[in-house]
Length: 161
Length: 60
Image (cartoon, rainbow over all chains, first blue to last red; front, side):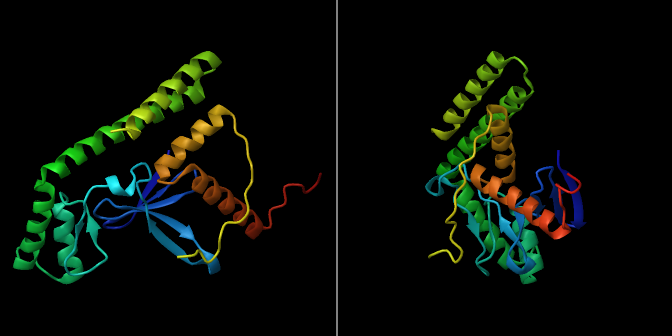
C-alpha cells in the first residue's frame, strides 16, 4: 500500500512501499521523482508503457505553450491551465477556443473507440494484477500456477486489439 | 540521440515465480518496465546504504 500526502493544493505525493516516489498534479498526470547526479531531483512524467506510441490516444496540446499536453476530455484541467499559466479567465475567449479544440479531438469517433479500448485494456491489466497477487499468497503450487496462467492470458488479451 | 551515461553493465538475475509476480505488479503500478523498476529501487537502496554508512557485516 502506498501513502498519499498532499504537498500543495493540487499536488499529491505518493510514497509507495517500493520506495518509488510519485507526484500527481491537478490534472491527474503522474510523475515519478528521480534523484539524478549531484542529488538533483527530477520529476518525470509516467508513460503508459503497455501501449505502443502509435496506439496512444491523440492528446490536446496547449496552443500557448509547448509544455501542456493532456487528454482532450479533461476540460477542467485545461481551464485551470489557462488560468494559472496564461492568466486567461475560464470565461475568456482564449479559454473557449482551447476547450473547443479539445472538444473537436474528443468528438472524433476514432478517439472514442480508442478510449473505450484503452479502458477495457486497463481493466484487464487490473484483473491480471489481482490474479498475480492471489498467486503470490497461494500456498498450493498447482493452484498458484493456474492463477498465473490466467493472468498471462488476460495480459495477452490486453496486448491485442 | 546518444545517451550520456549508457547502461553498459548487465546482471543476470533469477527470481521465483511469486517474486517475479510481485515485481510485475509493482512495476506496472509505478509506470515502469520490470528492468527499470529493479534498477531504480535497487540503486536507490544501495545509495541510501552507502550514504548512511550502513554496514550489515558489523559484528560478524
